[in-house]
Each structure stands twice: as C-alpha cells, then as structure tokens.
Image (cartoon, rainbow, N blue to C red):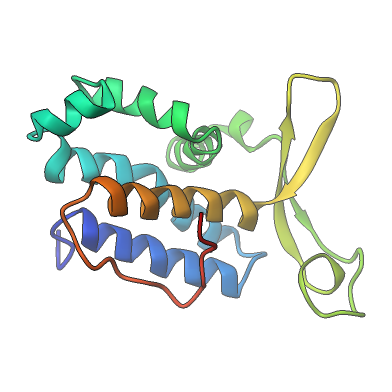
Length: 171
C-alpha cells in the first residue's frame, strides 16, 4: 500500500506513530493512530511471512491467523487493550472508551515531565479486583511496540529493523 510493502515497512510506520504520540502524549489523534497501527501489525506479519512459513507456525504452535491472534494474547496482555482502542475508534464503540481519561491540570509545573508537568492520556485497568488503576497510555503503547520489535527480531526475515526517535527499553 503506497510505499508500505511488508511488515518491516509497517513496523516503521508504527515507530513513527509512536514517536508522534510520545511527542504529544495528550493527543487522542496520535494515540488512536498508534493503537490502530499496533493492532494491525498482526495482519501485516501474518500476510507478509507468517502464513506461508510452516516451520515458524509449528514453532509457535499455530495453524491459522486466529491461532496467531490467540498466541499474541498469551505473550502480552496489553495487546488486547490496544485492540480495544483500535476497534473502538474504528467502529464507534463508546463502551470501549470507558476507563480512558485525559489527565491534565494535576501536577502541572514543577518538573516539566510526565506526571509532574504535562497532560497525558491514561487508561483504567482492573486486575480482577474492585480496584482500578490508571496507567499512562504511553506505557501501554510502548510495551506493545516493544513486543512487535522483539517479535520481528526473533522471528522476522528483516535485518536490520528500523529504529524510531523514541528509545525503546531493551529486554
């Protein structure tokens, strides 16, 4: 599509979307773009090389794209949250937006970073208890971007992988 021809190119798009979001962490537009791209990386990986690589499918214990999607969920619990944001934005599912907030005002000034100085988007998560916790969306998105980086490093046919402006933590 245009000049995005494979999962490596689509991963580059994900990094660029992530860089945009990290530069403006209170932007719903950048957050949605990043969530949609991170969610659809699975489609690009499947269509680009995984569906035709029987050895890799055997290694991952998968046979179909649905199996691959279930496998992803066993590797990172955070992918499903980004999928919810992606699907909620695409299909106007208002219930998907519950628990998503924009934090502003609190802690403004002072340190000029993150919680102490800038507005940011957060998501409410529940670990099976009645207590909900709010985590910055930047942390959630970074975990999924790192998942795709590590997946492509381990299983993908492309070397080297692109790097974005935002440094991702290493495993």
